[in-house]
Amino acid sequence: MRIVRRPGAFVCGIDAAMDVIGGKWKVLILWALNERTCRFGELRRAVTGVTEKVLSSHLKELEDDGIVHREVYAEVPPRVEYSLTPLGLSLNAALEPLGLWGREHIYRGAEEAGVGVGVDAGVGVGVGVTAGAGADCEAEPQVVAGLGHG
Image (cartoon, rainbow, N blue to C red; front, top):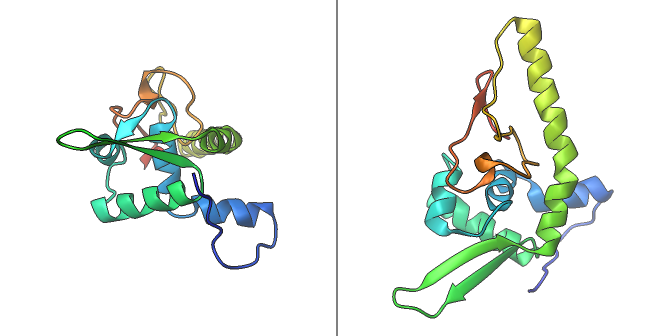
């Protein structure tokens, strides 16, 4: 595993963390890989809306930052699987409180607007899903108060 620092000085730890997870799709990739190893196609289906080009680019960046491990199997046809490294697992653990805050924020906003809010059992909204059937790569994104997970 190689860790490549991007150019630029960081002002604080949040700045450095946002450099790693910045963008619309990276936290959703982390969410999808949280429970199990996935192949590229599984990730593409799990992260609804991401293009193959962007997914490939984000996976490469996450791999360069030491967050995602890419395993290539010498088979015909070739098989590639992605999983979180220990650093990636610790990043997901650090993002869990942010996911909880996001859920509470969505619930509060929906309650104030008088909108009913529901979440399927075992499926969370946002990053930080650490258990349950909804955290695997085959899970469909859940919608809460008109917003997708994350």
